[in-house]
View (cartoon, rainbow, N blue to C red):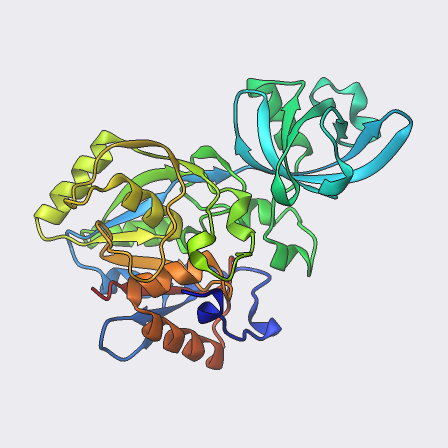
Length: 358
């Protein structure tokens, strides 16, 4: 498969810069194998699911992972920006840095404003320990553990996706909007965006309808926004992301399926994690560790029956995943319909509910 197979034209005005209000007022495109597309809203979700179905939600919490600072080298000072990507230890993170080419191992980075320096938590300094490809570096912070977490929370900004950040700055409203209502486990630098559509009221109506929810955790890395740089998809490598499916959740999912219920993943993050935790025999097992699963057409799905997800970028790994799940031709037709009828795309955009093609 080639990268060009997953390209399409998306008008700029289809990119959502703010979410729907209320969250579940967003549009929902229903895609079922061999059936016409249906234009609904997220609020209709309880009527689209059956008692005994189980929604798999990702309870990761987005941290304010974008940090501005200054690279200090002898008498030289250069402004830099870091987007934290993956935690390596209590004091070390990998990060995407701009301008990455101006950095060298051993450089000191001073994050935060100068007037913050009197505050201990403001002393968010780090050393460049290693450099990777594409501007990725390893940062060793002077602070560690809870002190480092508090400093990042105090000094960082919400890491809005680049297609939003290029059009407007992050503001206080994004601290709420770019977080699911069920977020619990700190660690993501990007939101599991399908989950942004849920409200407490919608979750309550789903429960009343007999639809359960099961929580898993996948900490989304900034690599989710990186473009695929190779035309031959066999050469592409995903950035690893840490996830957890505990034994109780695995058992609940297996029992739900055995009883005839369907497993519906909320977001590609939940789906990728669940597929990583499921064996060839279709049994979901406890999982804790990193996954770098890359799903393209031809992949045989083991666990998920349905997928609720937003509308994704052309030539992205996420668009490849939905083509694998619901069928490439079906998804190209669905996206053409969504563009023609004014659906809003990307993180703050509308949603789709896809049923597996095979």
